[in-house]
Image (cartoon, rainbow, N blue to C red; front, side, top):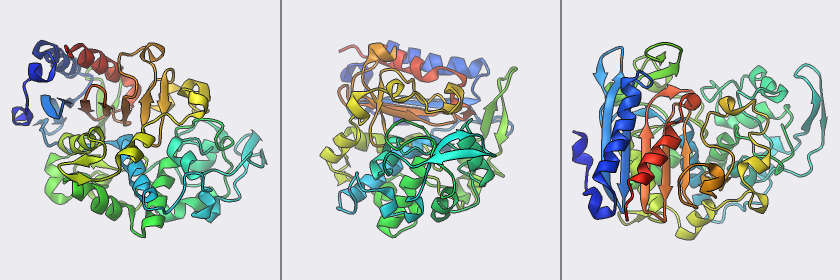
Length: 418
């Protein structure tokens, strides 16, 4: 059934059939070794799908094989979508990137910066400057992560900010953050944290619509992304993959989220712009095709080409990479960060990772490639120069369990022969 997705012959678009078989073999090997329960991989070049593979199980406990239309938790692959949603409002002149966030979320105007101590007794100081809207899009807001191994992270958890499955609402988030200091001065460090949840809230404030409705009306419906949203409707639960977590053993995973009882099967009060969406390979391909097409898909323009180029340019000060911006910003190491990218040779735009230098990054690729991944080992990248799209979907947390993303780059780029 996956073959029905193939729309072009590899050699016609400058790719090797034999090389693509190595991509398929790589993914199958992970499944056969008991590392992933199942997976979907998809490769498109010059707007032609040349590889689409499903293997393994979407629900091991129920003996359900992986389907081409399996619904996955995409976690942080939500972030590029929500960031794009906010920049669509930028195109309407509703904000400027250097606007203080407090202009729209006044509860955040008096935030101090953590200056020492622990979660029970700490000192604070005034920030060097206010956080801006661009800081939220870039993860330079000074905000920490829900799971940050820092005193600020502990304060988040004590305030009930344990994870994106919070029972609160986006509108309540600024009030819950108001009494907690920032991890760092805005603009001084790249900290992969909760900033994109506030990007989602800004979408609500500026559009006057709940985030789920805004994304549906402005992005999902126009692009035909029929299976993407913050919950799984009853009619699609049979296609919803089980969620797994890493364990020592064979297989090296265990059930963490049963698709029949998952929170995703019910309306979710906290619409996390950082990690809340579910989607399918076909839906995310449509999003990526729009990116590769300069903001337009099948004659429907979502965002202007210059705005999109602006978003997918490295915005880190002085052209730095993530390593030069303080690494992971005090999150306790790469495991806490989740493995969405290496630090060296990688920049960051407005919601997207950007490959700056493949030799520094020690991974094959092309400068200007945009990408990101999710906590359950999902990943995508779009390379405008090579007219290339790669999507990989599975459901194993944490994403740092295996180096599948770098291995996919090696096998995919080796398949390009023109």
